[in-house]
Length: 402
Image 1 (tube, rainbow, N blue to C red):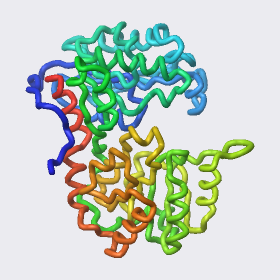
Image 2 (spheres, rainbow, N blue to C red):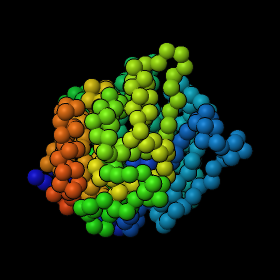
Image 3 (cartoon, rainbow, N blue to C red):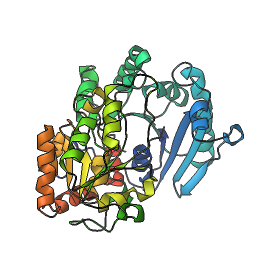
Image 4 (cartoon, one colour):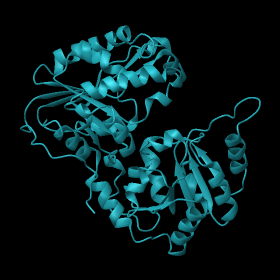
């Protein structure tokens, strides 16, 4: 099979040195920041905006006198800025809430990127209001989820805005194939401008060589007996806690390693998944390490004997998602086992995708019985290298001939 999952015909790109200004609104998700922040070519100026409201700023520990964030330049050709805006600026009053963002972009462009066409990447459909302020030469709608599930009480309005974004954007990119198929259904006039382009592998997540055997574990992990069945990600209702609980019970000779932000149970009567999660976490061979900084996660992934994606298949969010951990895991080369999510089904030749709990446990047993080398480490590593963030981002711009 081909090494990439790119859809649609290739488009001849502009001259590499042609001036181009790229504004990403916004790059709050690390995967989006990695993707567009990895672009480096002569003549390209990129601004990554990270926009959040007062409430989220306070949750991050920012005091009000810290909300005026300075423009930063991590390297030549790349700038980033964090903007703190009033709560409700995007959902309730987007016409007003986009004005400070528009001013920030206009000021940055006047000072640092006065030449070349402007391409605006909209990561939420609400940024149509920003597009109207900036009037870019190119508009890209970059979709990573079904956003109506973010704000279910405003689902009708979100869907209306998203339809408009797909119809009016020069290009719509979906990280999930199923989501791309859904957005193509908005109309024949826009269907040929919708592309499926999965997440890229962060450059620092691609190991120098594929780890056919586990790497030496970080100090805190080394205190736990192996083999390690590892998972990194959300610890909420998207996870198949029943599956993990059964796995922990069936394999007391292993350690389940969970890395992610711990969440408190709901007060009062708890939903079933929280009861199952607590039962799972109380098992002696389940170890919740908590949150770890993004820059050290690769050390844990490389040390896992098996990397897991244990998501509920029937969860509506999971049905249209493209887990970033697919590429994070593959960059190490380590074996992987996933539940049968639609996006994971696209990789059945690269890692094990199980349709049942029994199948999941059998896949792990098969890997462990072969000293955790399933013979596909090089295949995964090569795929991750071919689909590094910088290469995926270039393909994205190539769809517009940029």
